[in-house]
Image 1 (cartoon, one colour):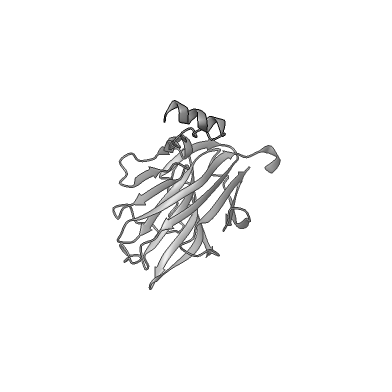
Image 2: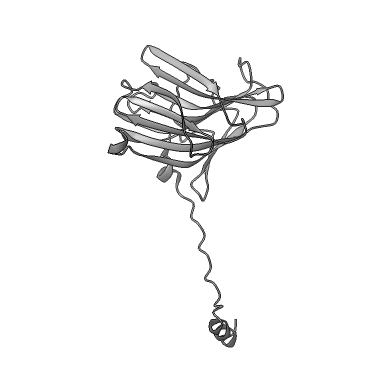
Length: 234
């Protein structure tokens, strides 16, 4: 650009705009925490908006929701005391798939785990289960918990379609974990309340993804926020 043209643009209030700085991609540990197993064959990719996409290979251990399926987070952060976590979860589902192992139906399971910082086998996993029935994926929300010598699980239908995102909000207040779901991140509905007195004050919290199918899949966790619970909400 010549000096004469630049002066003309300035005189007309049309100065060339400054280049827009490129948005930086946040580090996974700054948003979600540390990858639990550095040798994991899962692939982790962070987006510019803080979204985490996890691609789960067929080599990933096969799991189904149930009383014994509480599993440590793939990526987790330690937090003590009461907290509130919100997240939107969406899965890229394959059009066709077969089951893996002894599973009855091909399934994809995605969500959040809250486990004891001292014992990762004690805690609760909550999320969305999507199962392939014929040519259609059918969704359900689930929660499974495990303590020493005791476990339990509950499931309910998803109001959103199996291929649509679902929001989860987990609120730990004193000895109770309140789990809510939403289809838009604005209107929330209670799913279940679970006692967490045996989990301990310090817990590890973060995303989980696992499945029972013969092909890899990916899941995205975004709008993720984990923070201590404010005094007024307890």
